[in-house]
Structures are given as structure tokens and as C-alpha cells.
Image (cartoon, rainbow, N blue to C red):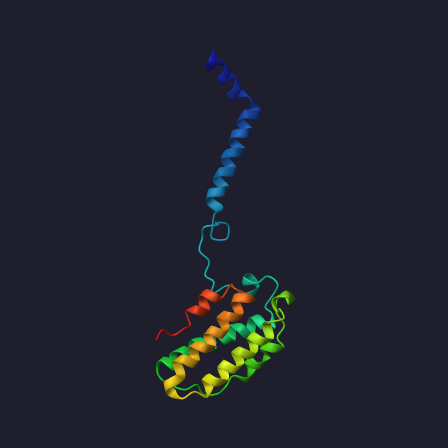
Length: 165
């Protein structure tokens, strides 16, 4: 009796059509899966455009901070070799006027942190060799202090710039 009912069901055009549609859908999902649709695919952030990283575009402050990170990484290697930095990066003085991505980022305390960073950076660029590491770490610590209050996202990367003594 059950077999007879299943036979009638299989003969139904709607049931056969449903099976075909489901099979076609499953087959297309398997064939079309790639890195853009696979949520577990790894993304190479080095090749991502800044538009991908920040869909609102890059602000002046974000671009400036990226230059500061790059400069700090170079300074770290120089300081570890006991070399003095060559020329103070005047561009970093724009920290006070650079527009952030989100206007709420710059709280009232931002300028104090920015002044501390510039003062520590200036001290580093005029350091005697025996104080390079200490003064370099003061620059990095001023970045960490500011980011602790204003934009904590990059703190982990900034901490990696410190030189252990």
C-alpha cells in the first residue's frame, strides 16, 4: 500500500519538478563557491584597498597615523642598532588639525595626548645614544595612552613596536 502511494507521488509532475529544482540549486551552490562567497576564506589584507578596509574612505588622521606606525617601525630598527633618527617628521605636527574618520574620535583630551606624543618624539630626535631606547619607548607609550582613550583598535599593533630592555 505504501509503495503504491509512493509510486503515485513520484509520478506527480510537481514532485519531480521540486526534486529537479532542489538538486539544481544544491549543484549550483557547490560549483559557484569561491573565496568571495565563502565566509571562511582568508582575506589578504595587504592587497585590500583602503575602500575595502574602511568603506567610508580614509580620513586625514587615519592616513597620518598609518605613516606614524610605519615611521615607528623604522625608528625601532634604527634605535635597536643604536642609531639616531635623522630628521624630525614635520608632517606629524598635523596631528592637531587632521580630520578624523568620525568627528567623535577627537575628544577634549586628544590635544593633550597629541602634545605628549610630539614632545616625546622631539625628545627622541634629540636623544643621546644611551637614552634612545628609553625615549623611543616613551613615544610608543604616548601612542598607547592616547589610543586607550580614543581609538583602542590599533593598541595591539602599537604594543608590538615597543623595545624590551
